Image (cartoon, rainbow, N blue to C red):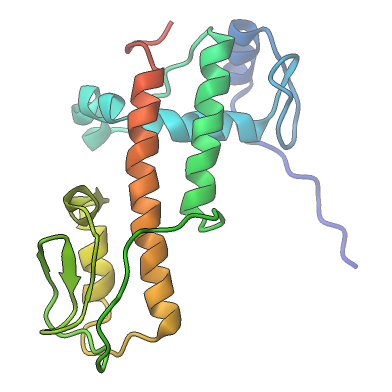
Length: 198
């Protein structure tokens, strides 16, 4: 069995010192801390993930985000940090496809399962003239990541192909993940009192 070197976070020392001072927590080099006395690199990552998924943050700093790396606003509020870390961790788990989530959508009509023309109407995502995924809310269908409309792009990439059982289950996961993402983004915004943070 090969020994791998210990993971080392690549945060700037000044950043770590500032965070330790603000939150009165001791930084540990690996994993997560207990957030009462210690903080770990994964806690910081989850906090960052939550902040960068805040719709208010994205709107307020939209111009900066187009031209520069995102700036991470830090808080001195330990309770707020802990709440955002928890929400960020939930998002990460969903986006890594490790969450146990379900959708109310179904794929009720039998057929050849060939992706032909993709259309959205009355909360149904049609893949051809007769087959569709139903109970797909408008906000899920319209959700964009990186300039792409997720639900549409995934199907467009499979145009002319037959969807198998695993493909359908994967699409169900995407629908559930987007619904949970939208919910958690709203929750993150409700948790953050205002920008800039204090």
